[in-house]
Length: 499
Image (cartoon, rainbow, N blue to C red):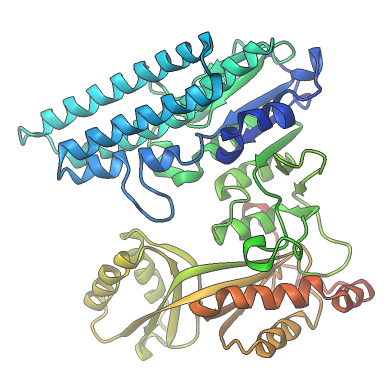
C-alpha cells in the first residue's frame, strides 16, 4: 500500500462536472494556495469528464445509445464505429481546450490515440470472431462495457496529472483500469498494487475512478463505480477523512424544484440518511461506498467545488441532530407501483419470496415494499419497457392473482432524528393543504424517514409543500427545539450499521 501513516491523509473524489472545469478544480481543490508539503498527503480519484461515459455507454437518464449500446445491438457496424470515432474526437477537443497548443496537449492526444486504437481493434476483432457462429457476442458484452467505461476515467486522470506537473506538482498517474494487463486480481489487490510504490508525503496520486476487478466494476455497481473505488482506497489506506467534490451542495431539497433562494446546505448528517438518499437515486454517495466508509468509521465530507469556502456536509456514523427535524426533502419520479392481490396469501409465507425471485430476473430495482394480509406492493425503479415483461412473468407464475401497475412518485422527509411526535401529521396536512392526494404512507419504527406515495404529476408540488412546512417554517423548527426527541424503539442491534 502507499507509503503513509493511517489517519494522516485524505482520499478525495472529483465528480465529472467538477473535473470538466479544469481552472476551477485546480484553484479550488487540487492546488489553490497550497505550497510544498501542503500539496501532498492526499489521494485523488477522478470521474470521467461530464458526458463522456454517456457517450461511451449510453445516456444515464435518456438511454440514448453510446458506443456500447450500439455495439451490443449488433445492428450496424458503421453505427458503433462512427460513435467511437466521435468519442475519440471529443476527447481530443477537450485536450485542445485544456492545454491549447502546448507539449502537454500532444502527450494527451498520444495517450488518447493509443487507447482508442486498442479499444477499436479489440471490438472489431471480437465482432469478426463472433461472425463465425461458434462464439456468442453476448458472452463478451460485460467485458466490452467495462473496457469502454474505463477510458473515460483514464482520460481525465491522465490529463489532470499533466496539468499538475506543468504547475510543478509531483503528480502520479495511477492507472487501475487494467489496461493491457493480463493479471487477474481483486479490487483491493489492484488498488494496493497500484499505490504500493507511492510516497504520499512527496507525491500526489491521481487515480482512475474505474478499477478492473473480477465480475466487472460497472456490472457490480452501475454508474456509481467511481465512488466504490474511492471508498475502497479510503478504507485500505486508513484515511482520516473521505471527501467528495461535486458541482452542488447537499441541500435540503433540489434547488431546481424548490428554488435556490429557499434551500440551504445541510451541515451535518449521518450515513443512514445518505443511504436513504442513495435509494432515491440522489447523488450523495453510492450505497456500497457509503457502507464501506461507515463500517470503517471514516467520516465523509461532501463539498461544492465552486464554493470552496463552505465546509460542506459532514457525514458520520453516529451523528443525530440535537432537535427532532426533517433535514432533507427528496423525491423520485417515474416509480412503478406493482400491486399483487391474492387472497390465498393469507397465512402463507413464501409468496413474497417467490415474487422477489421473479423480479430479480429482470432489470428492475425494488425501492421499497408494503403489504397487508392479501396485498403486496413493490415500488420499482425501472425503464417503462421493463415493466411489461415483469408483469407477464408474474401472471404466468401466479395465474389466479390480480396484478396491476401504476406510475407514482415517492417523496420522503428524511433526517437523522425526525421523531417529532406530530411530524407525520404535519407533513400529511401540508400535502392536503396543497391539494395533493396521498396514495400511501410508509414509516418504520426505526424512524429515519417518512415517505409519501403521490401521483407522478404531483411530485414536484409535494416536494415544495413538504419543504415549505418541514424545513422553511420557523414555527416548526421552534417546536422541534422545544420538543424532546422521541427515540425509535430500541431494536436488538445486529450491526445496525450494515444498513
